[in-house]
Image 1 (cartoon, rainbow, N blue to C red):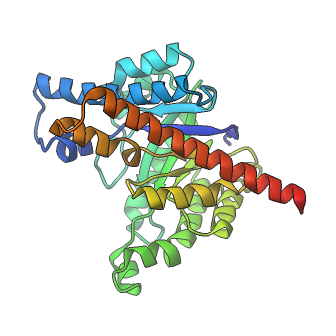
Image 2 (image 1 turned 90 degrees about the vertical axis):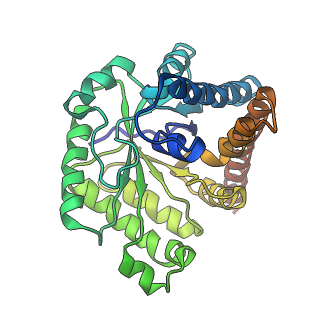
Length: 312
């Protein structure tokens, strides 16, 4: 069973790979060296924004980055050298079914970088394809067991995409699915994965509108002796309004220790930089501002919830 992680954790994730190649730059196929260099440079802009936020007062013991080895190896090394919390993905990018980025060689790559957290992104719907869910669980259990005794903890990013029948049940309304069906499906997914021997230290989950739903997620993540397991909220590339609401709701629930908000933090700035409507220093400054704003919002909401409990 995992040892868990319950300290504050404010992550800026930019481990996106396929979405950078196709979504940011519109490329496909095998990248040319100059294209790889362009993506690497874009990720350095994000990292510089993160570093500026830390220089401006974000607690470096709570701040962390999530970046991939392919485009961000030097960033991972620099952050680790600087004492910043590092997270690295181990999944193949852009796939509906989880598999290891480096196949049978995945453990060697983890050891080479020794990030504080190994992260997986997994699409798992309990009412989805049972064979796919079983294959994913088996691979994830292997990773979970490989990390026991390792310097790297286990971060699990859980996405629960709707099945076609689930969408039909809410007349195709994705927001209604998020509100009415997804919370219970998230609970079932966590339970099934735990029962399959998958033991994350941190669950990175989609935002929830209800404080009660957040509390139920924590209770499931911490059931059966897992009291130190933490939960963080992911941004899912949503609008700033959505992200702010999700963070404010989760921050007041004990067990939610932070967030991992990526595209909402940096995407617009990088697009503007790509298009030449802003310069690099402006992009860095805006990324830093947005990241700082998430930290301030989360801590304010958490402190307010603590004060209201104390006054009760």
